Length: 254
Image (cartoon, rainbow, N blue to C red; front, top):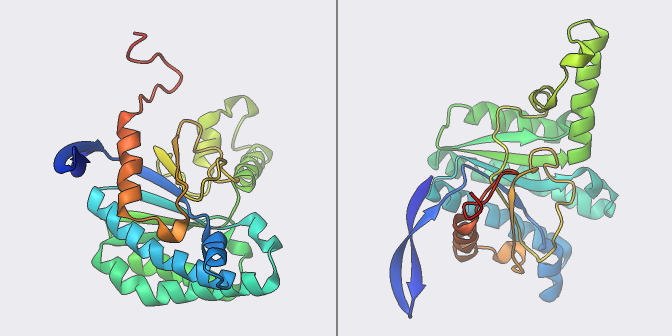
């Protein structure tokens, strides 16, 4: 998908054509460092990061992104101090209670990916409510990776496949990549074309390990709460320049 945007050349605003990813992943990283720089508690950074998600959704919707997957809480985040985990859970509930009317106005469907069944009951209730009341929206899907781990997702897929083999519903020799992909948490969501990571860290941190096999990666030194339209546009500019080969030859090599 391509869309007209605006850039600057020689100090003047110029029109440009950007290639927009259909499916975008964002690792929302840097909340704690953002707070530390301002001598604020880490909870203030998480709150600022949650507020920024609203802006990201609006900007992605305006650009024409169809699927936005954000890394909100990993399976490893349970290892953080209890008070920080508790604050994150409270913020999760508050965010969807406060902002669902705005998400509805933007036509954004909300879905969740991760080990949702093992979340506290009040969090599971928010997930179920969010998915149910937004299922009719069709402008963009916001997929929230919560209690999510890429390795756990692959293990979960393998367990389901093993059960099918045990039940006699699937032959071992018929297992292929599509079988694994079809048994991931949300098999209907396209693999991300582009994954953005603010905060300068250059790793996936267990995010969409299977799905990101051929995703383009873009890293920004900007901490997540400060990541805005300018940074998103720059990521799309970089994506526009990429030659996605999927293991084949580049345009110059053909």
